[in-house]
Image (cartoon, rainbow, N blue to C red; front, side):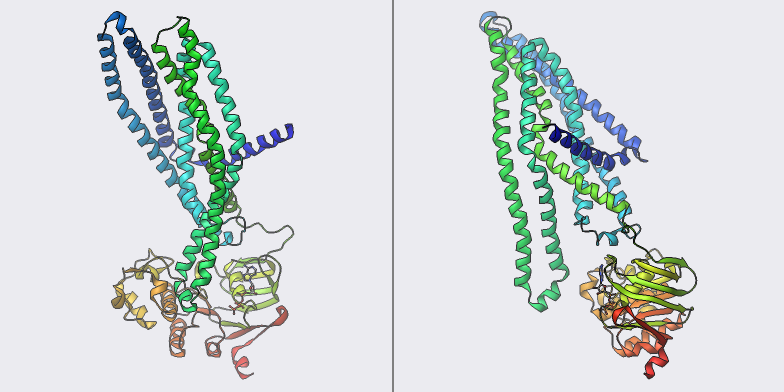
Length: 575
Ligand SMILES: Nc1ncnc2c1ncn2[C@@H]1O[C@H](COP(=O)(O)OP(=O)(O)OP(=O)(O)O)[C@@H](O)[C@H]1O
């Protein structure tokens, strides 16, 4: 028993620590005064609500006593006087309650905005979004950043205010209750504590089930997004039946878990519902003997019931909010692991070596051995080459031999291995990946990506489009500011040419092209490479076509068993 309790304490502490690690930065950020000011205002308002509630309990005590005494006193004026006081209190109370809820939501919104920006910064820094793909523990980061943060800020604030207002309620109404009866106060306390313990015991499984639910829902949604993103390929394959099976499996997993969730919620509800019902009778049972003995007036029943309900609600936060608390705990856990992963995005395995990198105006490798990120496969061994500006190189080799991986190493995406790599600064290089990347946005931002804030006039944009043989694109698709789903509207070859236009506008010192012209006819390919040559860009290309050789000085051929061969392109053409 002791061991379990200690373990439970540790688990709770961990959860609390995780919560605090996520929550704290906002309250100490540049927005801290706004946040703290609003929180204090909320506390003042909640104190005001309490004063009103305590007053209401006295008003109804007097109203009921006046009604009970009427047969003897024939006094109606006391009754009406308290009804008027009550009306006056409502006029003050209504705006306080409404503004309290409004400010609470507003503060939640500020907090969400701040926290989401913080997560987005970390997500898009140091290529964390890319490294997360290889982290099996972090599923669906998108859901964590959108949904989990939203519910984190909103629920944290609701709970915090609930707890703080409960403390105020507890203090003020305990005074009221003690003035009626000490035994009433003690009975209530015992009832609420026992209720909380039993709820926590029944509901402990809900934490894990809620956690799983979030994951399964996100997996199902991701499945749907995947179908949307690959709609055309699925349509060509007529893969609807297979996709449907996959989607249904994901959905079924969510449904099954939800079924489990509602089963446990039902078990918990059996207890909480009866527990909540009984509380209405409890003050009457405790006050009745005092009343029957003639030691208190009739209105005490009403006041005791109101005070009892208020204190009971305050003490029962855990019971009432248990389900929300478990969902919240699951959300805190998910956000916490995302924070950890974002803060330490790449953790090399103990003893694992990485390739050294220095920056210079050329591209060179000295005895570079490159492995896959999991260190399980050697892709190329002891590679040495030296490429001066203006000397292009083309990488060839069978599929899966590691051509794209060498480009990843140059870009710094992969670094597992040994040896030394010299390369220009990343901002002097532009990579065109195997699958053309189309941004979400206008044709203009498509062309200027990734530096969309550059001021380049339309005449120049048109000129570049002409160079890549896409002259009519703006007219055909609604101008430079049209926002379309470019990846679906343009053909693969058009996307490749658009990516090339991006390259021609950026004019980097080095262009790293991973089969960037694979979908083009030879005429278009020639045209694009000639344009690049004219801008004095050094090209590092990957490709299977012999036509590429003429635009490069060297050929690097990757062979079986991580071996390689470096030769002049001219020589290679003759072999
Ligand atoms: N994240 C990863 N973790 C482990 N292995 C990977 C990872 N990504 C790719 N690989 C493996 O590394 C090897 C080299 O991949 P790479 O993409 O460099 O091949 P490639 O020569 O460019 O092939 P292709 O011509 O088909 O594009 C492949 O066997 C691939 O399965």
